[in-house]
Length: 538
Ligand code: SF4
Ligand code: SF4
Image 1 (tube, helix red, strand yellow):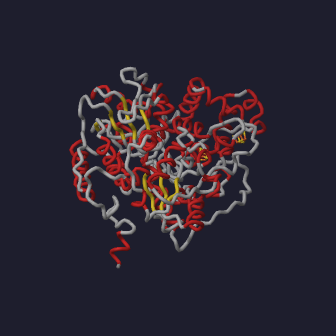
Image 2 (image 1 turned 135 degrees about the vertical axis):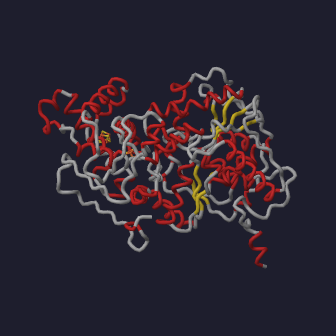
């Protein structure tokens, strides 16, 4: 962690507005506040334009000579292609309703992190080059000249937006600053101005099927390891089918679930659930990643990475697809997959083989969220659950932005949690569901070098966790997003020590009473379950 954000020297938030006008572009690339640029080898692998070596803090960004022309051409092209882009640039009345809704503004006090001002950074260029008033009246009409300082400001602030869409909930016109950020990042990419934390996972995914670059044999080994661990905890030998042609269901999850911690326990939860209900399913070593870092880069890259899901479903001959706990994976599936790579007419409308429920909401994408699937199993009394096995936890739930605002999946995870644990407490109303606060590290911002910005952006989320910790003794924050499972632990360690992070299906796996299992003494983390713990002390 960078020195500036050590425990000994906590972050301070200064809301005093700067004296300078916002129209003057000023950026200081200070350690901890920006991501490292993409390595050219990864950009080349993905055929991205202008790969090269440069550093944000350097004066010379080694831009191509005609960089201005490239940007303006790219903008013109996108204004023609995306109606929302032009609309969002045209209709803002600068009412300010969004101003204090962004977690980065709340955590940094930097006015250019207000959604309205973030968009003005790009809108001012749109006015200057694409509107008559801007061409004639210049600054008076809120227009600015495009120069290198503006470009540097774009890079700084559009990589301080997690594309979380909280601002859009409060905008009376529904302006979605996330979409402006997406456009700005696409434009920056035209000059080779990318960050490595996005491009490297995307390139890995293109090469091996997943962000972490895990080859098929390593995937198989990790599955074998999970099988052994489950046997040790439950006494049950589960089967985990991989690349099995003719299975009814293809299961896709983020790769972090089978390689990172605390994700791993959610992965064990998936395997236990599928074993118990006898699901006819398969994993794939090719579509071994649900996450799609292309979404944080460009529509083109998101589409390329998403294609493997349908192509693998076709190759394996499954009937429909089930998806695990991931945030942006679901945003891509829900909002873009149909038009990117659909229609998936070769698949069936998903029907639960256990309950017979038709998932009509997935009749087009043919892909069902695991929380919908599990909630349906619980509702139909198909699972034997012992919530007391999760008694060591006082639980709250973080609505991951992409799942809540992007997909509208609000009640199913809560329904599951109410059935698998005994103590559940909501965070304050204005910080959950559609109004949830971002973890502060999504959309490719989750790198260590960016830690100060992550901790600032995550401050409002952490503050709401602190509230339930102090009020009710909450010690576990659950979520259904792999990025959250990676980024919330350091956030909480800094702002709210003593609260751990887990996926919802980790708690399902703990509570699930398997047919023929031995008496469990530990949870999936290998920790004594409460009660057992007390007995051990007697
Ligand atoms: S709330 Fe909407 S209209 Fe108002 S300033 Fe923000 S983006 Fe513009
Ligand atoms: S999308 Fe999220 S991070 Fe971006 S400006 Fe809006 S509230 Fe802030």
